Length: 256
Image (cartoon, rainbow, N blue to C red; front, side, top):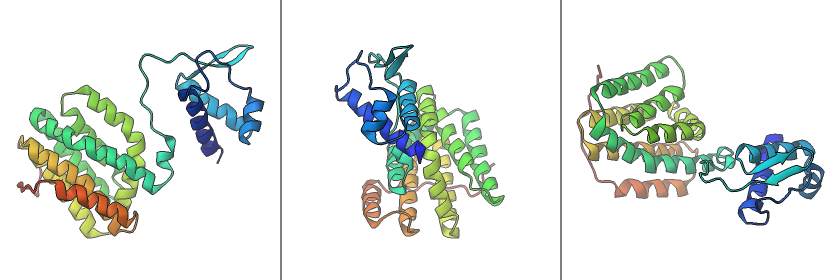
């Protein structure tokens, strides 16, 4: 609970800075003053202020206090920590993934080397082996998508996916946990992965974009069918699915 309180307080303090209520060079209230103003303990205040320091939003001056820092030239990418607090919030991150991965897959189809395609097939096999061994396959699934990112030849995609993994991991646990309850779900996921690999291996960027996007959309639909997320989400996911062109691509059941 202390972590949640500190996260919420950190967001309030960040809002104060971003709104201009506290300007660069302004001294923050003391720990005691912040604790009393927000109805939390000094420990919670300390943790929240530490978050601000880690984001370079404030600086400490020994014997003087904590001050709002000058805005950095390059801002670090951060997500609202509340994205991990509910299934519905995790779905928001899944939407970010859906937008990104279609284009990443298309670029991978255009640029992947033979060695990267071979690595992609090994990563796909690793997922199947993990599931067969009774594991959730989350780490292997993340590694699979990481290889696709690397296959674009653009190191920024690798860095971006690496950042997103801390948020995608929980969403993937939810989706894979849901899929593990039904054989038809698991088979569908395997087929979607294989279709994506074959599209990339065939240098078919259009098909790769389609299969990558459909994989995320169908994962959302499976969450609805499994009772994990709401009917409203089903309609939203179905609208995205209906806008995608229908593409038929040969799927190899056995991968070397």
